[in-house]
Image 1: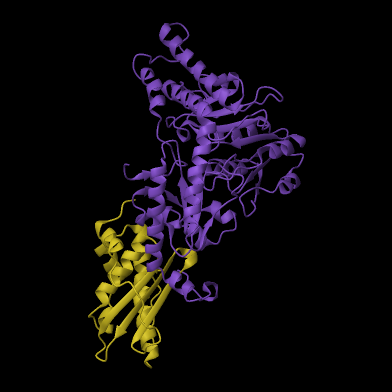
Image 2: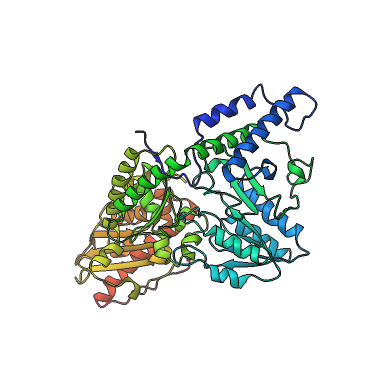
Amino acid sequence: MELPIYLDNNATTPLDPRVLEAMLPYFTNKFGNAASRNHAFGWVAEEAVDYSREQVAKLIGCTEKEIIFTSGATEADNLGIKGVFEMYQDKGNHIITATTEHKAVLDTCKHLEKAGARVTYLKVKEDGLIDLQELEAAMTDQTILVTIMYGNNEIGVVQPIKEISAIAHKHGALFMTDATQAVGKIPVDVNADGIDLMAFSAHKMYGPKGVGVLYVRRKNPRVKVTAQMDGGGHERGMRSGTLNVPGIVGLGKACELCRLEMDSEAKRLSGLRDKLESALTQLEESYVNGNVNHRLPHVANISFKYVEGEGLMMAMKDLAVSSGSACTSASLEPSYVLKSLGLSDDLAHSSIRFGLGRFTTEEEIDYAIENTKKAVNHLRDLSPLWEMFKDGIDLSKIEWAEH
Amino acid sequence: MAYSEKVMEHYTNPRNVGTLDKDSKSVGTGLVGAPECGDVMRLQIEVDENNVITDAKFKTFGCGSAIASSSLATEWLKGKTVDEALTIDNMDIVEELALPPVKIHCSVLAEDAIKSAINDYRVKNGMAPFELAKSHH
């Protein structure tokens, strides 16, 4: 076993060697521009892109023509939301999203508010799921788009996508989802789920960085987005720019592997995740964040009360994980996702996210359990709050000197 | 962000972790910060009849830099008189630990903890507390 152990697969995943192998020829002798229609170099590249489109389409249950390649999920989120707003603004200006969305969605919505959009940010319940009744109540005849993420990047909860899309459609709005954490990990089918637009990226599913997809429905209804990048009219005019052929080939291969291995992999990962979680919640005053029944198989987010996340990560120095602690961000604010669940700031500061992946082994999880337990106990020995808690002092009654 | 060697060293081998009897007249306790902010420091000093700090202990809830700052503070406090201890400035801690700008508040907290412990000791022994400068907050 090599140290450190990578348990941050929600941030990014390592490239699968089989994906790399598929990509390599397209960096060297198969270097053509997929838009070169008049010679063999272009044809080879175009063929590879078309094959990749098929592989992506198979994974999410759509047709090849509905795949728009982008530079990643952030671009796909921008294109989907801004593109729909501009294309459908004569129908209305209202967009509904949720407070726990990724910044690529939230900041895009904020941007559109300056351009005349009205945006509703739905709160989530304690378990991280949105309240369907609140969604229903927020719908108006001006609502053109509901955009709710599939699986959350910090806590892994999976929203009731079918129910959400049904509500959006009932009121004549389009439904979009940022499915970056879900595609390739759990079954996502755009028709069964009623998805009109969907953003995701390759590097969260063992593909390369710098390539992603916006799925745009072509039938029932036919959806259009206004291009956000002007140029040569690639990708059916919705996203100009020379195609990143090696990246797209890698994305296709990554999708194929995820499709073939998803069932067994999801079972294996949720088994390891449950082992990790049940061992760590045996520590006193540790809490799992988010709904534990509706979630991705590979994420565990746990708060260890009375220790601070960044300090804890320093003690877990052989583990690469992330924390909702303020100290890990430039803003000095703890995770807005955890705060949206109603978690107090001190519990948000105390959270650690474990993100398992394809290359995580049981031996690594056993090591992670021991390493984390030791670190939590060590930091609690140093923690005045832990000592006060053990002495039966009610910390909420203390007048803290805020700084 | 990578931590400086000195921060890592104090974090890995923190000096003077522990608890002094807060009810003793010769002990001053400073508890600063707030759990909501992600930092709480408790720093305690024991002072002898010659006004010399004979022992110092800390416990800290916070990031590595906060733990290192308080560990360093206890090291510096031991053997100093109370008046000397009052001259410890947060920038001395920043310099010694090579703290980056986003971690300066950890050193500020350590300085506040020292002053707050000294004041607790003074009040317990019938002296007026020092006016605490809050300018750097």
